[in-house]
Image (cartoon, rainbow, N blue to C red; front, side, top):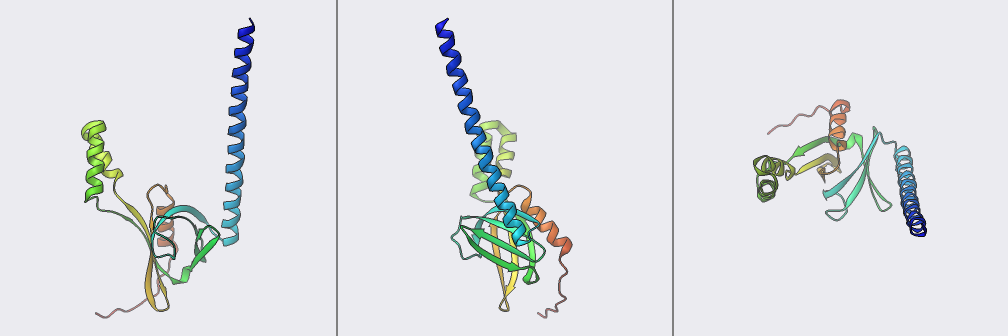
Length: 177
């Protein structure tokens, strides 16, 4: 009888501890979400997401940056540093998928085949294809671009590209070759 009471007390304490840890994590994620929403509101952003920097920003390659996309500007934020590009300077936003050729796709196919046969090879090759969000803009009369790794960013990069395609009114330019 005494052993059952001790076992029940241990189980209750364990479940209580798990509930407390879960509650703390929930509150922390709520605070982070509210802070991100407040930042998005302050910046006038309609969409925001997290992407990995590849090139074009004055940041190291591979750093994760928050991107805030709005009707007036696009803002990249990392550790309190904000880098913005006015929307009227943006000439194009493209969601680009890699061609799948190369060592990374081959390695993905090989590991997928090892785990799940032929179907796994196809899925492994697709998972290894790189996707990028490329933002082209003009600054001081020069064409520049920001390249961001969109893998693992969900639908945010494609939504940004589609919204830009819908809302962008390109200036007519004449190019003579």
